[in-house]
Length: 265
Image (cartoon, rainbow, N blue to C red; front, side, top):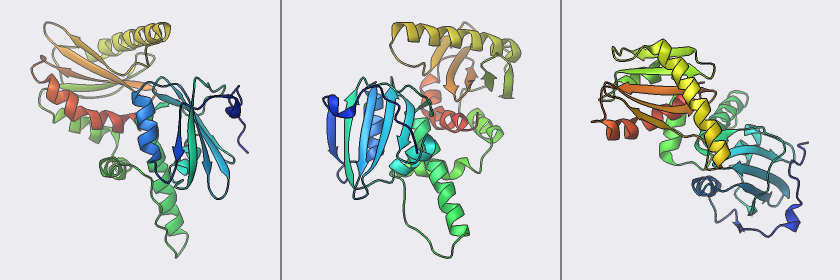
């Protein structure tokens, strides 16, 4: 049985937001609170079973999820299929333990993949079929259906098809290049890896000290190159362009590929 991880009793806190699960899309609620950079806990009760669930946030990141019997992404995947019950959001309730640690979008996508895998396994092991689904948008579900069939090389090659991108690199937090695609005569890829890891660690530390939010992306423009990078799971992904003339297109079209890479590293 999952253990309670909050220091304060739910009943002792004035709820910031509450409502019925039958009238609320849980993924929309989670995304709304994350976009508002809220920190706290969503306390949920599933009817008629009376099962309780908790989702903890910290500055746009899901840090901990649990139900009476599950924890982590397993619990999040289960909660996304609760359609009857009630919820309330309690601000500034922090989690002692951390069993997720993903951005909201990353966590939602990972939970959707986990649910689809379970559904597939259940169908293979039984002659009967089920019709339960996770409440994500059609675009998100179509992305998830393809992620399990694509590897990082395929995703990075797709990034290279975006106008303006010369090269793509994935760097570990230790500064070593994990994988790269394309070619850029403007930047030494190995040296870029070490520099990005150092810069990203410094930016994350600064964000923590300022308590503004988790590091989401970084854009650097030099005289001979433009570098845009984002944290993806336990690594950092960066694209290199010759200039900023196509930056708008790059930012728009690269978003879904960065999200795919986040599930692969």
